[in-house]
Structures are given as C-alpha cells and as structure tokens.
Amino acid sequence: MTDDGFDAPPHRVRVRYCETDRMGIAHHGSYVAWLEEARTEYMRRCGKSYRQMEDEGNLLQVVDMSIRYVKPIDYDDVAAISVRMRERQKAAFTLEYRVQRESDGAVTAMAETKLACVGRDGKLRRLPSEIGAAPKA
Image (cartoon, rainbow, N blue to C red; front, side):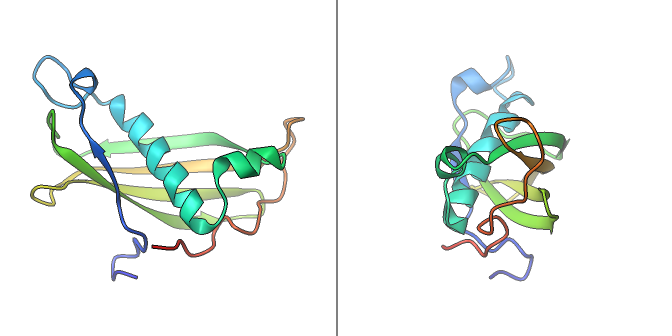
C-alpha cells in the first residue's frame, strides 16, 4: 500500500484522438468513460467483476459524480488513474480517483463517484462483501 492511500496499481488509458478537442487536449467528457473503466478494473481486483455482480442481481448505479480538472492532458499522453475507497455504507460506497499524466506525474484531475447497490427491481440492496475488500495488485 502506498502512503497516499491509493493501494492498487493505476489503470492506464492512452488519450485517443477522438477524445480530444480542436486544441488536441482531452475533452472533459472523456474523463467519465476513463473513470468507469478504472472503476471496473478496481472492482475486479477487489474480487468480483461488474458482470459477476450483475449476474447475481446486484446493480451499481452512479448517484453522484464530481470531477475537478487540474491540468490538461493531450492526445497520445497516457493517463494513469488511481482509485481508492473513500467510504463504504450498507448499500452505497464512494470512490476517489486521481488522474495523472504518466510522463511527468502531473495530476490532471481529481474525481469522486458515489454508487448505490440496487436489485433488478430498483430497490436498495446490501453491498456484496467484495466491495470494500483490499484490491489485489
């Protein structure tokens, strides 16, 4: 575990041309998909994939999201996205994200998502035990 609390290796995403604006800078909306991808891999490292959870009837709905953009990241740069559990409740949890430009370590964004666990009927359910488990490297 690192001293900053981000205990799993970062997920890496190379900024594609289609994710940039006319200036060659990653569009702010691209971060949403990158965070989802990093969250999916984080969950897998915790012991259960999204697909397995959904097959068991546990659906995770994003109920809140915030992103603070710090510095730009450009076309063909690699974004290293670190994820950590900030809070776990009975039926919801909050993850924090740090997005860094891999070439120089500059933080390009900080983000947070809150997800609630619901059944196929839309009613809240208790979180599976794997959510909140320490991720494997």
